Length: 528
Image 1 (tube, helix red, strand yellow):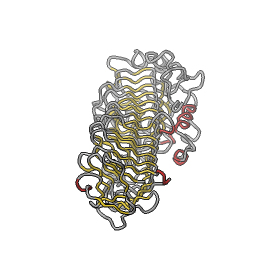
Image 2 (cartoon, helix red, strand yellow):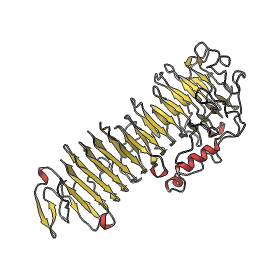
Image 3 (cartoon, one colour):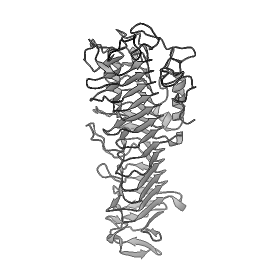
Image 4 (cartoon, one colour):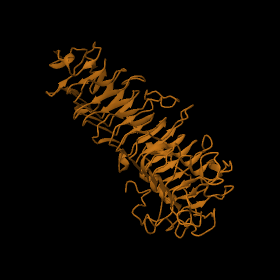
């Protein structure tokens, strides 16, 4: 049943076989009404809803909410709910302070490629709740939260038949879901499936995902990804896989807009893109970050970002030479820390030709510690090849001073020629002689550019699950992350165990995964 109200008993829209125009639910245009079909009420101000059958709602015009209007689309007693949009929209007008609820519905052809399916600007304590609903052949969903208004978007599907515009040009693709506005009230986006384009969060305090498999968002498809552009965002337990769109050169599983400085992203799987993560500000931890296609796994961490206990690796050959694994660019120079990560270059067969970590001119990496860096062939050899190096084509004679602290790392890159560990320097310190610049790198006290075998690490088949396995629920995110933990756990007695920087914890290990005894050793524990 579809119900609308303006602070009065529910008004039920009845059959209207010839109605067109906009369906106004509030304001002066909705005041006139007449009875039809046994006392049900139809507004005369351009009614656009036709009841085609039990649970069906056929739009002959936009559904417009204004004032304190509320609308409820749900299966109710009918047991089903279908909204047939005919290219029209559900939208607000003026200062809307009411509520919209869509639950358990199938939505068909709501909006178009150029007009949104849903476009709401919510004021006051207004709320929008869309749950258990599938959008087929429909446009973008755009919610602007003003004042103390809030939005919940949960267990919904935006299918691959979505009409949102995809464009290879930078910034020209229309998001499948767009949230903006200044409201700081808590908002929720979880358990959703998006199979075309991005979910964009430009308003504060969204929980994107959650702590269980049921909360995980799956965002998979052409130009798929998350766009982060506000404060207080928590991105937890999601699977995001970019499928390449022909001609596109700016794809990313995660894009962080400048000024986004306090995001917490944890226990996610991010795959693919020119950059897997294009910018990031805040804390990035316990994630699997896979398959950079050109530039980097993580490009441009912002000031005061902490990158720790993540697993970076390659399964698919890139489209072109990967420049670096973690790449500091654009004068990012304050408070960036990279520690307790595992970076697996995949060996010569995976085509990762750049450095594990690069720090461009004008940038500075405050701390690089307890990282496990292995199987990088460094085939992009311009004379400055090294596991940790300056920007592309820059000389390392002498190594530029761009590290504040670098110690307790392990390097094993036997296919590199040369197998050089550091092409950057720490001011006033001598590599492998001084504490704070490689003295305690594995093995502690060893020679410059020492290579130490961490033992057999990795997973048979690299990433042996298909998107379909994950979409169908045959494999859950917790299963994926737990399996990666098992595959990348150092064997008993191996070099990484207990060899990390003790300033972070006594018994700290090198890499993202330890022996499970430390409180911060949480990679692969999602859902437990």
